Amino acid sequence: MPYLSIIYRLLIAFWVGGAALFTFILTPTLFKNFDRDMAGNIVGVLFPGYFKWGLICGVLALGLLLFSRGKHWLASSVIIVAMLVVTSLQAFVIEPKAAAIKKEIPSFVTTPADHPLRQQFKKLHGISAVSNLGVIGGGIALIILL
Image (cartoon, rainbow, N blue to C red):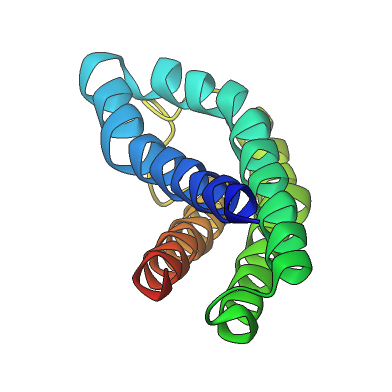
């Protein structure tokens, strides 16, 4: 069933490519071209779709991998499950908390950086950023295992 292998590879490429594009191109471009509040609002609107994309690609890739039991299927399965756990935590725990805090901050431009809400947001943002890099790293490992 070589077509399953092709679909699996495409799903991994879409997931990792989407994460890399969002992280390294889209987000920096928005923050470079818009004020911090506007860029943050745009990224906040995009986050649910971004996480849904990763979860859909990951679940489908895992299903195909488990069905086809291709090369390195066990190691790849463990990596995909870890990536799905991290993405789920980002989507259902970290992002909603950060969005709630963000709503309480009138403006990131005018609110001092040492404000307690900004500090809470900064901590969640840091956790999310490291998590996102972990997902991208896991995806790179999957590509190497192909």
